[in-house]
Image (cartoon, rainbow, N blue to C red; front, side, top):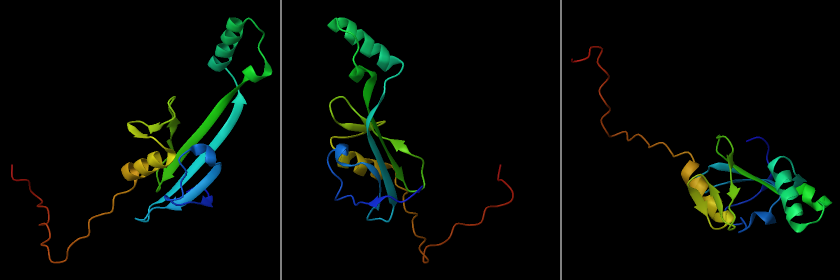
Length: 141
């Protein structure tokens, strides 16, 4: 974890990411730590976004306005355990996704991603079970 944010639990996650801003950290019932980062706002348009705004202004028959120079920007990612960040995208229909993982709400996508990417607990070695024989030095070929 990079730094601790505001505490949050799975039960208190909102349905929309717009209700959050900043860094939030929590822990699952299994003890797996996670951290959510949400940054929403506007940023200066550049490249393709600026070209799209210019084309829209030409279609309207009006010059570009100051509002055309800025675009909505949402940066959302989650850190699960000691893994790298996993970006969450917002689909045009309002759902959330990461690769093949999807969720209708923000809470759904976080729960699904934790279920997929959380470290699996190691199976406990049973003391009564016979141990595997030591590997032989010679191969029986």
